[in-house]
Length: 119
Length: 112
Image 1 (cartoon, rainbow over the protein chains, first blue to last red):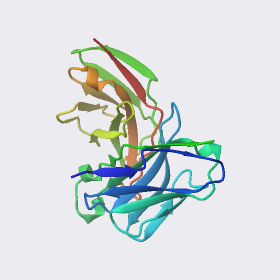
Image 2 (cartoon, helix red, strand yellow):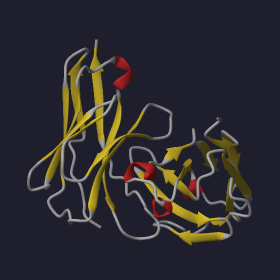
Image 3 (cartoon, rainbow over the protein chains, first blue to last red):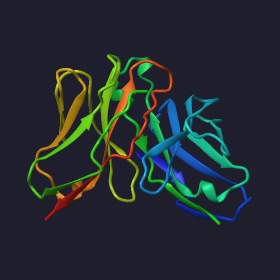
Image 4 (cartoon, rainbow over the protein chains, first blue to last red):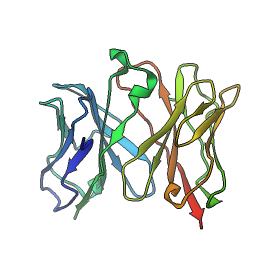
């Protein structure tokens, strides 16, 4: 199992450019998440998805859009990048405990991150 | 959401036990206590979780106070590879998102 993978690993954008970050998981997880991490801070939730075709806003959703067309993929889009979006982006996935698993099945598995710089 | 308070940084000597404290005085009865850690330049990884009783796994132990207002993550023998930021997180048992809210964590330095 590859677990959670993220593409690309690094990217530099100019202000106003757009891009899409791809997250893929091979663990058949229902839930997927996008976080951002700024220097010296913890992770903040941008958007999440509780299943294929569903998405919802997290703590800091402004300036981002997401799509979950396939269960294994979760895409994060920046339509018009701004310097304030310079950050490291992490994707995560987890099972849905409502399907009968224990609390431990809630464990989130994180990808290696994408370092994005907007100049 | 209930908040957690952790020291910004701690140091430990290699092969000695480490006790990482976390205060969560506003915890509710439905909150699980989760610990994650983030090694340098990596995504966070799950360490352990608990509700009321102390818990052990291959990575660590979690000691939960009787009133649940605090907890301690215990690494029994710290190694250099345990140097990381450790996050104490409260996760509401109900709700559809099963979200994790990360604070700034404790930076653990392990000295050789």
